[in-house]
Length: 201
Ligand code: GAR
Image 1 (cartoon, rainbow, N blue to C red):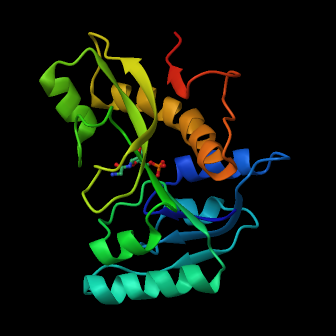
Image 2 (tube, rainbow, N blue to C red; image 1 turned 135 degrees about the vertical axis):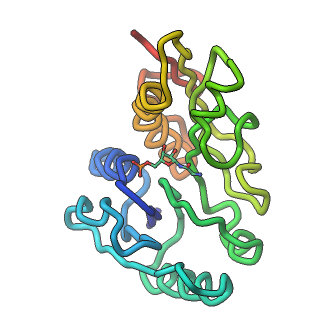
């Protein structure tokens, strides 16, 4: 499956996806890393995978998404993995790629959709937090959940500590989930079983 990874920032999830995709037999192949921000740090970490920038700043949504679609089609993209892509996509674009586009979100959906998930989890006093891989649908962070990983919220946690614990789970959950949906069969971090990961001290 010819796959594009869309990023906006440092690209640590992109790096973990690219590393997994390099393994023999992995069902998705990276054909493009695309950013909506020209200064995204992840653009320097793609190795031999082609990169593209489609700027979103200061542009109408329709023009941005039309160009995004054009660049994806020009690269023969069949599947999209959003990896820290921080621009909300409009209904037309989402419907066009529905069933072919997934996202990773730093919370246990349906809790804490949107931004600042770790600060909101701390403020809410939840004892479990985590990350979710889900299909992208027109409602923001509302698509069907594919896989989740949970971590504890520890008494001394601040936002940075909690974010780091969740991010470590993102880096194993996302490659496993992408393999599952593009390959049609489970390819799990720890062997067979349900696609859920847990935190280990
Ligand atoms: C990740 O934590 C990802 O889950 C989150 O942004 C971070 C990107 O980090 N995504 C969202 O919040 C999407 N709404 P990365 O650039 O190092 O992968």
